[in-house]
Amino acid sequence: MKGAPLTVSNLRVAYGRRVIVEGLNLAPLQPGTLTALVGPNAAGKSTLLRGIAGLVSGTRGTVRLGDRDLLGMSIPERARHLAYMPQGLPGGVALTVMETLVGALRAVPTDLAPDGASAANHAIAVLRQLGIEHLALRTLDRLSGGQRQLVGLAQALAREPEVLLLDEPTSALDLRHQVSVMALVRETVLRAGLVGVVVLHDLALAARFSDRLVALSSGAIQADGTPEETLTPDLLARVYEVEARVERCSLGHLLVLADAPIRGAA
Amino acid sequence: MSTATLMAGEAAAGYRKLILRRAMLLALLVLCLLAAFLLDVATGPARLPLSAVTDALLAGRGAGGPMSVIVWDVRLPYAIMAVLVGASLALAGAEMQTVLDNPLASPFTLGVSSAASLGAALAIVLGTGMPFVPMDWLIPANAFVFALAAMLLLQFLARLRGAGVQALVLFGIALVFAFNALVALIQFVATEQALQQLVFWSMGSLARSSWDKILILAVALALCIPFSARAAWRLTALRLGEDRARSFGVDTEATRRGALLRVSLLAGVSVAFVGTIGFVGLVGPHAARLLVGEDHRFFLPASALCGALLLSLSSVAGKLVVPGLLVPIGIVTALVGVPVFLALVMGRGRVS
Image 1 (cartoon, each protein chain N blue to C red):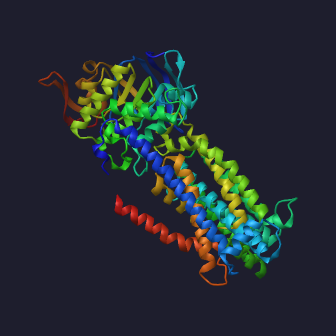
Image 2: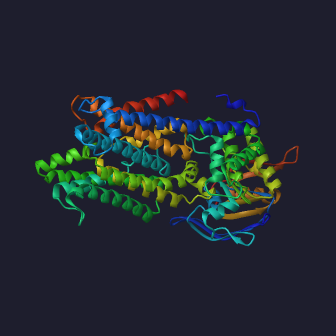
């Protein structure tokens, strides 16, 4: 049943009485495409992602994968279809990379890993795919920032989801690792035909690696389309409250250059 | 560690070796515990030669003679109780530290022992408590019911507010203060005799061990262990954070509820029978974590074994430290446990 689009309609996400996202609709997110969610701080990007992932108890509305209702599913059932990767791995945990992956596979029984040996083999296959097999026996607190992000990604990919939700996978990474992590994410999404959604702060990175770019502010969608369609000086003024230029570099990638903040903007 | 230069294909072998090493460490802990247990049975105020102890053990219960009575009715219940209580408290502590994501959590952080003390205080001072419970069992029954009620109250409060894990810990601390104040109030109005009994109760001592109490605690432990074992994978996943665990398909709320229920049963029964024995529930899991890491398949049994070992050794120390006098084990655990704990923490600081 791979290859169904993800649709979000009339979504309301609230923490207690604090409503963050209200009446949000997203046109179908197609499998094999990567969508970037961008927006200023406190725009509700992470909240929207957690809401889609079914992690916020006060979530109303529908999130469908094909014709299946994701929000109506039990937690183990949803985890078969959807993987969510939060920002960062917790520190101070006495677990090796291998143990976290085998744990991810066996936390709730799946067909992927009916027993210990197949779980270990599957985990190693995922690590090899991401090129980090050499980290298998490292404990989590001995990983560098980039390695931690890759291990987090491996945990999300281990259960072979159809929907991959990543919350700022490149935060706290240097330039090289930003590019390599995003390239890996894009490659995986294309190869496995996943619906990929990633929250990003860096607009140039978002424009370069995503097929579709959704700009969010105050919990509402401000623009939605290809990176070329979405990233305009007008949008940057409205959403980020900056005077900005969008230009192409010598390789043809989009660049966003912020010139000055707009004072007293709405 | 030379794992940085791990070649492709070595990961699988390395992982198998890691699991084997952890299983060996568990086996080693079992052997140490067995040795400590035998030492515990062999020591005591009546200086029996080792051969006499083994003879009495092998002769079976009710063989007659003073030896048999000392070994079977005094030493063996003490030693078994030490093992069971140590294992229960440390297992409870390990599960709590995981589900509350707090390395300081132990059965006593959330008011279980304070509630038990309040129940015991009511029974001792006012002579009131559970209806239809014989007088001999009034104190432990009351202590257990209060411990369980405290845990339920905590869960109810947490549910009411839809509160997170940190709020749960804060509620627990608030309960500790509330119960302690109530105990102090009862102490204030108690007679001198009742006060003495209450203070002695709260010190924590194995002197109240008996075969029927051992049976009850063993049943409680046997009830909890299968559920703990089943939850081991989910608890391991929970160590990676709430959101990540749920993304792996773990119902974190249900896992936490189940773990806290087991904790209240284990800690409630333990405290009811032997009083407040601090530190085992905190140190046992920390020692286990340093030995076998946090794969809960190994971490949970290792915690229980470390707790049992620590309490057995404390029991031996309690008999030897002042010749001819049995120092309450609650005092010994803290005195033995603190240096052990500090050594563990310092040692880890050097390594990392």
